[in-house]
Length: 329
Image (tube, rainbow, N blue to C red; front, side, top):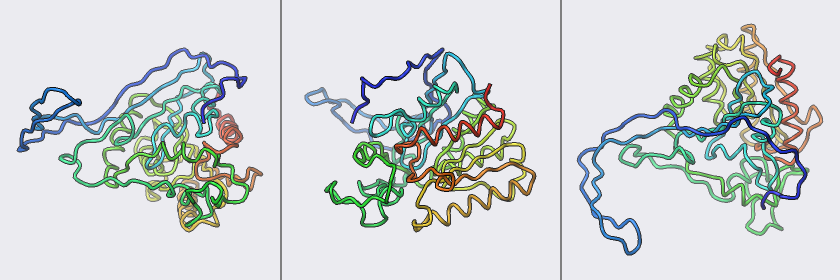
């Protein structure tokens, strides 16, 4: 599905947009044999010497600055595991994603592809010897609370078993699958290093993050609380360090959870850990608001709240919270 060009929307006026790469390191590879390769069909063979210095573990970042800025600080959007910054762009069924929505709300938005993902790229096995994890077409459907658990996906669309009232655009599920990218399980150190450099470059800021990125955003905010004015944790799969909860006593935090949590095999435990971490922040004098969307009348949300059909309603809830925290002009 493609965006509807006939849809009537106010144009987005920008004062600037662009992109850059940040972070990374230089690694020297030695002792590898020279080989001959043909770079294009019918081309002339060339000698390929794999020995030498390589730039690796950099991160790609895009930014979009509205003509009229209302957010007092930049808004950084960090995606979850096996995904890229596309998470926040156009939804699988062609609607506005949170990138467009928050730019329209007047925020300077930075969207990144974490190290190893998308346009950030990944190094060769000579540098990262571990193997990446790849997902099947069924994996996200059954694990992200779109379908009703294991066995709910079927290659026949008529036989898909979605959760009752699901807000995920199931008719465009295959477009979501096209966004999936390889994921390494031992790259956290490199990811944290690049995100930290980004925070040092563009913040003070608000960080909005999803799923796997909880382990990165909470950690970086605890290490650099002076750089973070608020945290918006969208179903964080990993909480911060409770022993360092006091570091966030001056960083207001919002945790947002979708529907069907209690029906899932993993999310009740993950949510409990998140809430416990939030309680530790509050015990240290901080401010944490936990919103379970069904309890405020917003129902049917999957793990991918920013893609669900009611993503605008969830974005408005986040915006209202940011306004109440004094972060909007």
